[in-house]
Image (cartoon, rainbow, N blue to C red; front, side, top):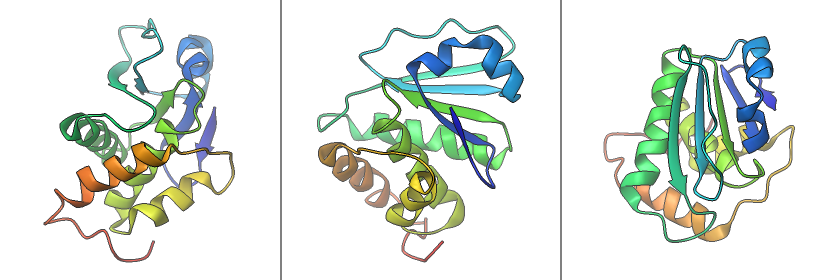
Length: 149
């Protein structure tokens, strides 16, 4: 689990969501799980927990991609310390987190992705990135996503 500097945001993998002591130690208030292929974590009642069953590749419904990103945006804007995680933490996690940061900052999805991958590994599935970017940019008439971060 690693923190994204300047944001109440941590990126991780499915095992991180199951480490309740580690979540509490980091001061996290929310966990957003993104993996259809992982069982849901069992978290304490005082922690926000959302699960979006995303495929690591093409084939996700646009509404589901938007819902995942919009929740992360809401949590970032509310300053809630949040873990975003998926199976290995290398594709769905940085993709959704990067687009969420782009929406918060008003920059391009690619710039948001660069922020979350600056100090850690990533291996974004091309089909997922294309659909995620299309779902957000295509819907974001009121959002400015083309400026620089």
